[in-house]
Image (cartoon, rainbow, N blue to C red; front, side, top):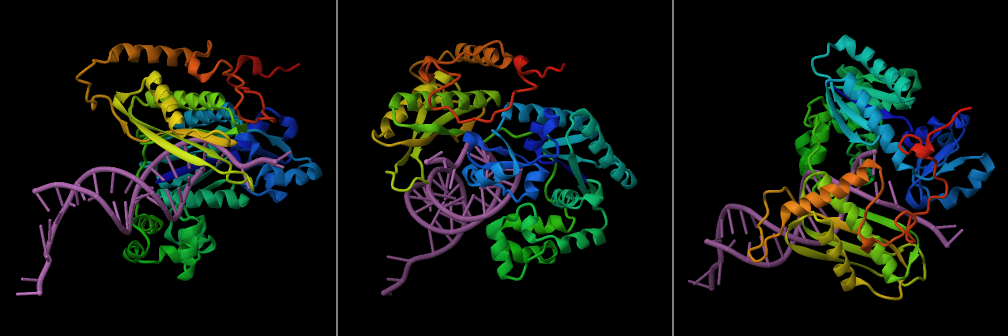
Length: 421
DNA sequence: TCTGGGGTCCTAGGACCC
DNA sequence: TCTGGGGTCCTAGGACCC
């Protein structure tokens, strides 16, 4: 059996955690740059604030209903997430961290009658330790566990825990759930399925998987099997190294100056290097993209990308930044108002695969030591070091994000520690 | 004025190989 | 007149997830 544990309104709940005065009030959290609504408290949902709506479109509702608005505070969310996951590790034999607010647990070996009490214990413990509310779905496959979790969220009478072990209960639930609420079925597939009269989860579960594979894909066929209790997906407790690393941001204000753009892209390249070294990988190529806004009508549009190959595999920040700057020289065009830029690494290799250069022997060990030292300093919170190419105003860069409603980093920065009295 | 930032997997089609 | 059959690798694009 698998459990899916999912935090309720995670970002919004993190914000109210240290602001008890806001409990029971409508709260929303915006995406980076205060762009769109990406999380809502139950009260905000009840007011009809939709997921993903641009912030400027809800200004009226904010005023009218006194909705409290926050910028994204990922320092806070990531730290609270780590605490929730650590708690789950103590409650279950194996945990797969699936996203910032969700985890799958493997519960094999636990007798059936103990599953419901275990779900309740998980809810209770995270409520006590982290002050967050979670829902728990338990079922024989991951897809059914997702479905059970969906039911636990949707129907409060379940008490936030749903165990779906009997076929009859699974079918009863599937009959009520639209097919697009199934994990792995999005809008497009939902539309194509509807054309064939497949509207509920049960409709899909009753299709022969061979037919679905032929007409749709092997992925959807797997979903059909999972809905029928045939587990095709297993718990992946050890995350595989990323095959692709992206660091990109929309700018707080449009960028028109090449030096400012250089600072931005070298900072993204630096971050990409940190992620790369963090998973002990090497890059063989790096891409850069820059673009104007696709939304502003009447404004000249430009978007371009360039890729460069390294002579030997590298995770050295100096190589990555130099490449980013070289690529910018290739695609930069004066006269545009740039809205976004990013760095992509997609050809990622493990150390030991590299072909060293015949001509110059890179001092691999020395660059590894240097990078490890820099990463260490930055992780310990004793200060920050970076390369001069990133510009000197690393804390408040000109191109930085707009975050006008940012809450304190309550749990990760000493000066933001809450004081009482 | 104002529209996020990551990821994954699969498939089709072209280039190329023998 | 008649023009094979079996592969691999790469890329772009589409779909999904949070």
